[in-house]
Length: 554
Ligand code: TEU
Ligand code: CA
Image 1 (cartoon, rainbow, N blue to C red):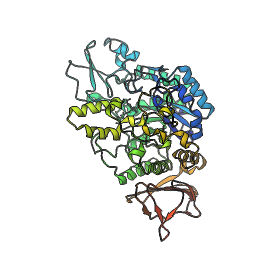
Image 2: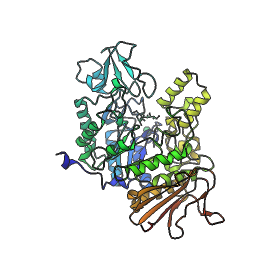
Image 3: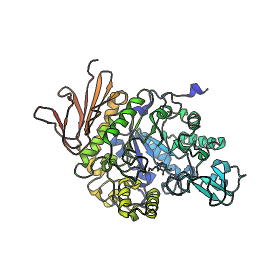
């Protein structure tokens, strides 16, 4: 039975697709309450069709008290009124489908909200049928089972007097962890997912999916012993029933685990978000707030390893940004003098690789971080960090340097549509201040400009469909030890992609032969070619060039 239902991942639509992430709260507000909503997204589907993306990953829009901006779900089968109704969701799925755009739901299966019916029941008594949907431990008030900490600060254990027990929460106290050891809970989850598949969704993003097999008594949070057993059951009972894309968020993934998650036989998921490159600019063994310069050679080593080790054995996601990360042009590009050049360079560098690229809302415009006062931040993680580090005696300036660099709110300021009030995001007061640079950086200014960051992304998305080498080509890193240039080839049969990027703000000499004049320059971020006196290629600040040539005869 299992074999006939398993759909291999070999020739899947998402291998030449580009997926766009929308953070609904900040994308487009249709009713003037300052919060983005589903009707707002529907009104922007033509923009997304123009960009050329194939699917939209929606951060959660289900009912939620919004303690963690929707990642605390209180009803998995209803839409939160602030975003709209189930009918709006069905209209979005239908309208997107007319434009060949699939809708990917964000499933938060590691934990629910403490206002979910299951938890309201569970905490009534130890005998309640829903009690074991969560992770409880006996104890005495004031003496938690162990010293595990929650991701957003404080103990991972919360005392409930009614049952004289602690419940486990890896995130906020309002996000109690679900107990995946309980087959009844797992079946409820599968029934819910199949209900969404019946609604016509095109796939799922799985929030912190590598944490569902937690074993708190052994202080295990991710990569628990039963994780892949649960994932194979989940995949078999739900995802394999339709032609879906599934992407798991796996902060603890390495390439060997990724081969399990993205096994080409389709037994688990399509791919995962792994974060090895994302964690490079923090002090080793410390938190993301403990800033360190980006080790460029290490960045190349990490990308090279993920590209080569998953070729033919799994599938990469490709991303710089999401709703939890600072904006890449401010983080590893240059959001001042070379904002456009560096935003394009980062796009060209990533989109030439093998895997499915993800574009986070506003990345296609080169949107930047913000530098707000603490009172203008909204994110629970940022606000808790500020308090925690103040109490530990950190200087305010140092804490704000960390927050300006790494706060999740950098990604959550309103999408910048035009140079009108609040960048056209809302007619009301936005839930978080609009980035003041919206007059210069907005979609209206870019969609018709052939030199815009938007146009660069549009071209890269088109290339992925037009040239099979983007989806299939084998990756080979060049210039591994070069401190400035990130260069690689992709080879598929008789065609080869050559990508050359200067990752820094100084002009450098490129030691590579470029395939001009016979090679085709697919895209670059400078209008012309700069050459040294001996004709070698000079790469200006953040200069990127992508060539398509006939592969050299073996
Ligand atoms: O994020 C998981 C997670 O670990 C991140 O929050 C990470 O700890 C932090 O953002 C980086 O410092 C997922 C969701 O993407 C995030 O928005 C939720 O807050 C979290 O899970 C809980 O659901
Ligand atoms: Ca609204």
